[in-house]
Length: 296
Length: 165
Ligand SMILES: Cc1cc2nc3c(=O)[nH]c(=O)nc-3n(C[C@H](O)[C@H](O)[C@H](O)COP(=O)(O)OP(=O)(O)OC[C@H]3O[C@@H](n4cnc5c(N)ncnc54)[C@H](O)[C@@H]3O)c2cc1C
Ligand code: FES
Ligand code: FES
Image (cartoon, rainbow over all chains, first blue to last red; front, side, top):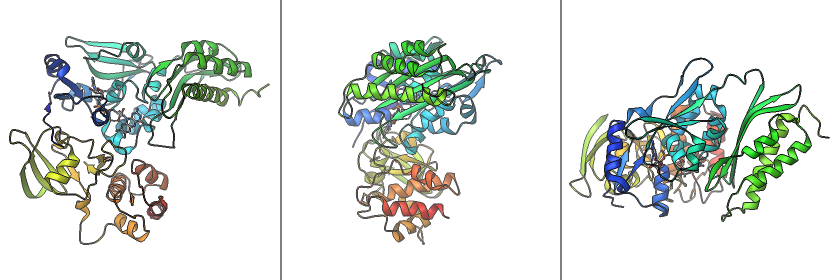
């Protein structure tokens, strides 16, 4: 295979952005290149004549760190952090284990050594996204003039026209939930145990007051396959401030089926994926509340 | 970097040059920045031990170590190797067999052998990271390596033996 594409390797954010605005639709950014290569080889995306590698841009390579004052702390992750680095990072393991679990479920070790969290997000269907949604992650972009924040949820609604550079991912670590039992879950279902694209992925965070059996602060997200992950606000409403009961579980199951609209593909029908998503969320709620309350 | 210096001009002269360590030998190659490492190895550098299968990161036949970490050479571009330490199966061509290679032979963990270099490199990567990995960790380390022949019985025995020390 002989290739003549030009690879640019700017060493700062500003130059990377200027290059991309000059080269316009003749170029694309590259982090690990694992997702791009799959698209090029599959013929779903043409290799751009100009590739702008971000491997020398220090801002996107920022080490994972805890920033901000107590009570308003956030974990900051450079967009070029590899999935393997995410998995072994002690701060992330302590503050956002659900995201670590998500990264462990992506591809195999060699892909995780090269693929980045930024690339996973920008693919719009990455398995890290449901975890980032329930963690209320914010994305920091460079738009040529300034750095701007945007919630991942908001970005997912308008992800079509990305020309900006994703610099870092910010995860708030909310201390106000401290007095409650906190839960977080992440489950990916594929056609085999590991190294498999997702059919359905669900993630959730929240609090459960054991004595009263009441749920609060619940966030839920679902994705999988080629579907852009979404949050499930209507399902969350059915749970928040409500007591654990079998009725609650049935309501949740019904609501997920209404809110989630996956598409049929060669490996699973939309109806099957809706059912799996509902069952996964209900089984997690049962695991959390069921030990306290025998199902009536 | 150590050893003899290799200079190689491939494809077109206007391409940039990249320097990296290949199996301990400093190597300079002039090639398109986006050329795949698997093509550099097999075609330009005449090192066919690294195999090519799916070409999309799914089979693991093309596994090499980059800075000690398992990497799919079909997904890696020339510029991504610059200044790095690349190890291929040919780098294990020493006087005596490496313990991982020896176990593959002893346990009959290969039939056509096409997947074997990739499997060996994945396991070598893990053993570089951890001196005594568990059976589960070893299983995970080759989760991106597919074998079409053996049914994994022999490969599984290799993992068991390695984990027993
Ligand atoms: C065999 C295989 C298995 C896989 N399995 C999974 C899986 O199980 N789950 C999963 O989620 N994914 C999977 N992937 C997809 C992919 O590898 C991952 O999503 C990975 O995290 C992508 O990261 P990357 O750095 O390689 O992205 P790249 O390929 O470099 O880039 C992806 C996209 O993001 C853009 N981009 C990258 N960085 C930036 C930035 N900083 N700012 C703006 N744009 C940017 C690129 O232009 C491109 O459009 C798999 C891929 C392969 C090859
Ligand atoms: S050829 Fe690289 S993983 Fe299959
Ligand atoms: S021995 Fe033939 S593919 Fe594994």
